[in-house]
Image (cartoon, rainbow, N blue to C red):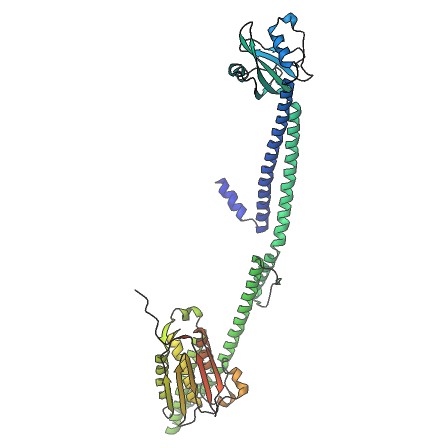
Length: 480
């Protein structure tokens, strides 16, 4: 439970603090591992040196022979000594007290492992161990088998020892130094980690400030400066944020423009509708009926304005639909069938026109209703600008749909604007329409992966060209 609380508390810390703690912890672990390893290596080297000194002492000329002679003679004859100033030298037998050299600073405490040397007769190797004397001083001990005392037929071993005070003091000093260095290293690593975290997270701080500024002021013009040469995660995040705010600003601008244009376009039919309805209402209220011809003209005008409003609202709904809503209904569609359905509607709207069609099979991946609406809008445009009794030519082959009329054509300076929302040619202001038809066409065809263009046709009129990727045969059905 306590560990869980500490973990939760750690997770509530700022990122830079967590990074500093993690860096310090990683450095502490590494320094601790290196320090412990170093200490054990030094300890092994120091003990190896002490062991070599004990081996050298055992190999001194006459050492073993003198000690053997001494320990097998009577006490009155024990006059020879070869122990150094700090060296412990004594002989032991399987039983009995040790025979200690007179110059030894003390007696080494004998253990069972020492007497095991006699039993196992380890005359060449001997055994090393840590031990103590009678005053509890730490010693490094070498026990080496010498031979057999013929007087009592017992094995004899020499016990050589040297104090470990200097070695342990060195190791203690080394441990203290390593501890101090480790502590300084951990503190330095924590400080460095905090500094690095602050420097590394500075762009994140800027990003946070920018997001808070946008949330507080709804100002989408703010941008985060990014070095173009940087490719790290923070740079990518900053670029993504700049791209997002740019897209949002563009979307807001388009939305505001759409609202403004829609309001402007709605104002005209609503004003006309209101005027006509007020005339009809005033006629009823005053009891002075309008002439039948004027009444029919007003009702026809009201009906036309209502139709125009319904068309405009439908166009606005089409433009407001999200990409996700379109993607759910995308499927393979017969372009030939779609154009034929649109032609039937176009012939009803222009019964006095001649529409010639040459259609070849072609299958595309698109939303059926949106694709048909786009083709209908193109044909409506041709019907609207065709002279009475004129001809419209429609061809579909290899994914290219062309619709050519013989009307007045579009001036060259107006061609770049024909697909803009609510844009209408000055010469077409008096004709019905919302100015959204070709904009919907362009958007639908682009979503199907194609393109649409309008150009002046040779000999007069306008030709609309639609190119949509697809195939002349339907795709194989998915296995169920």
